[in-house]
Length: 287
Image 1 (cartoon, rainbow, N blue to C red):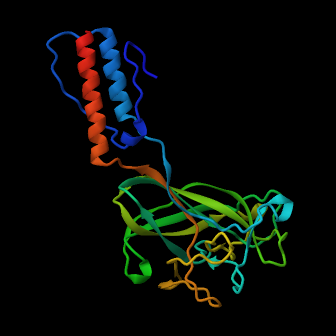
Image 2: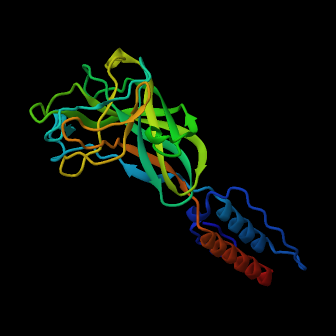
Image 3: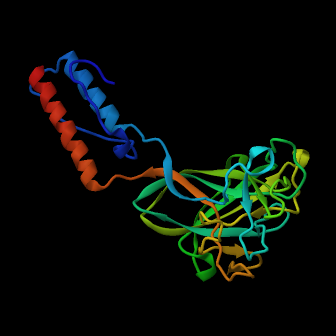
């Protein structure tokens, strides 16, 4: 809270992306200390960057009931009729990648992507992630349909156990496939509202505590009932191609979380400027 004569409560998050703000004015009288403090507070709140938030989340691969796996962990059970544990995303010992669509409801700056992967192996409890690096690329559209790369990042933000094991319906307590989250950071990359694709893959591993460089897979997105979510996923092997479950004919989607800051609409920014102007007038009258 800013103190000094004017109490100012402000939705700073809605105006956060505008980090540099210039306001020029001429006063015919000297501002009092209180007015100067109030003006400084107003400008600081207007310019304060908003914290990153989830802009898009299509990341469910859990099945119900929760907590029915090994050591009380969650499970991700292969969908009825399918025989696929996961899709190959091995850029550690190969060049495979996966891609999946995401949609931004407004202009935004992207700060990170989180994707998920597992490596079939023997692990301790709790399992320690073997993944130490990864890559993401934003595409204009489905790369299997000619979409082109907008930007790429390999800035690794960390990896951790998601709390879920990928299993079959007859091996609910199997611990060979713990699913890990991997976060790749971007330097606040600006994107307009719309639908894009993000390609991703782990790229480096430390297998001392588990994992194999020959085994890198991603589970598909699931509906609440455990069935496959119908998506628009693609895979790169020697070329990009759509990925479809061989048994069910459903095109996969891959779990992804997009983090960043939404850019406010011009009308919201205008309201903020009007409010700032009113505060400055009030401060001048009190001087």
